[in-house]
Length: 292
Image 1: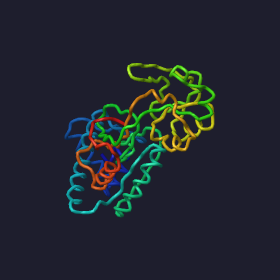
Image 2 (image 1 turned 135 degrees about the horizontal axis):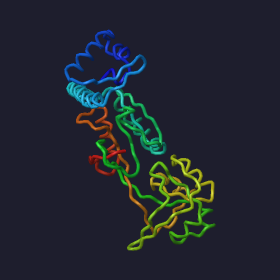
Image 3 (image 1 turned 120 degrees about the vertical axis):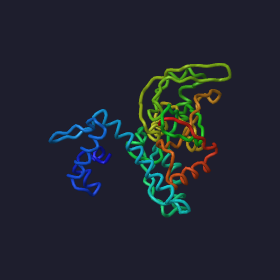
Image 4 (image 1 turned 135 degrees about the vertical axis):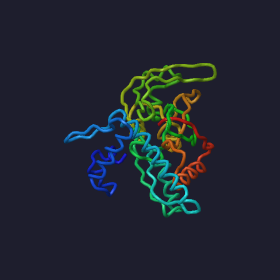
């Protein structure tokens, strides 16, 4: 596992505090025991074979479970300690996650939290995140997601744009320039519903971006509209800098999720943070097998 993760026998030896000769010999004995080559070696590169990748995945899983077992026993009766790596979308991270982290650290001073804000979808296993907050719709996967709350998509624009275009029905939106939100799929086709009526609209795409803050800014400044989660426009709707288009019609309902890598055990600090996230949201924190 160390050799594959580090990329060379020399680096693996340094990580394990062993000599290069010992590591090389152990690899040879391992390949002899399993009866198949696990690594392809030359003077400059070392790559796992197909069999080596299978062996690496299974072995790493076993080692991770062993580490978690030790941590679970060591942490019994102890206050949460250690480091948590969290990622979240920019807007949600600024407005919700960062304040939550500040409150959590005030109550758990022995926990260190690293927060990375990005609207790009990252691989939480590969980049070793403990928790990822996701907004939108999730697909099946081995990652574990807990739904924190629901939201509704809404169409918004500036008051000036509303007065200029006089949008009275979904079909009227095709006259407005449209900003697509790539952070939640970048869809350009939207279905509006009102009672038993349904209207599908393909708006005129003008801009696409993955940061909701940029979308809000552009909509406020320009003669365009966007479709975003309602809670990310709440302050602007309250102040009047944004207005909701077609208030009698509804769009999709999505969710806010806390996603964790697949694991049977979690560090007590991670569990404590997820408990806090549950308590600070209205929706019961249920567990589903989903992807981010």
